[in-house]
Amino acid sequence: MTERKVLNKYFPPDYDPSKIPRLRRGDRRKQFNIRTMAPFNMRCNTCNGYIYKAKKFNSRMETAENVDYLGLRHYRFFIRCPLCCAEIIWRVTLKTAEELEAKRQAEEEEELANNPMKLLEKRTDQSKQEMEMVEVIEDLKQLNQRQATMEADHVLLRQMWQEEEAVKEAEKEEDDALIKWIGAAPFIAGGV
Image (cartoon, rainbow, N blue to C red; front, side):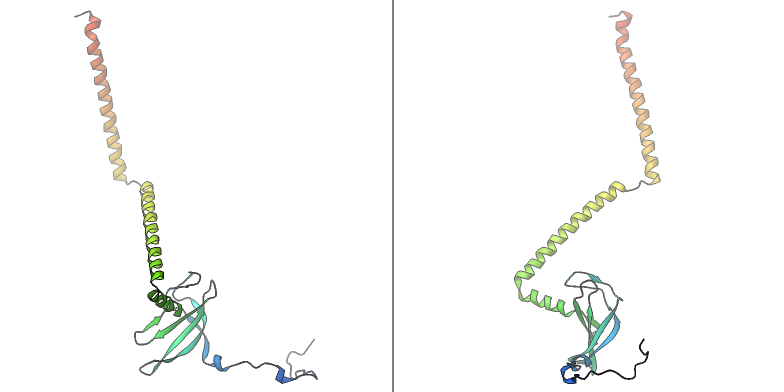
């Protein structure tokens, strides 16, 4: 077994430290790894997965360059979507005390503003989805009406109505039987 605490490291005779590549630490020094929570509900533009408010993430934080408010720095956060691992970026805005949504959404909005065909396609998709949702809502309303439970008042009223209908039907049958008997009586008695 080896020693638990190694004091001396082995360097082979052909060891050349110049062959080992050095890592660039200048880029990473600007960013800090921190644990943060999602400040608002958001949706990933890549996989359309929802990320709910207060979900915890391991994120990278950096200071936004050339952006400040009253001498206070703005921060930009980089997280990964938990479903598809796409990078999502948001920036804290101190002037309005809000977080700006991901950079990708802003780019998508710019693209829609510049390209009228994509804007038209998006509108048609939205109207199609609205029509589908209206159909689904109507189907659910019909289903709820079929499955609606009757209240006690409705049940009692229905039972009373059925009893009245049964009494009326019995009286009508008695009247019909009486009319038949009266109509047949003169012929039976040998009259007329």
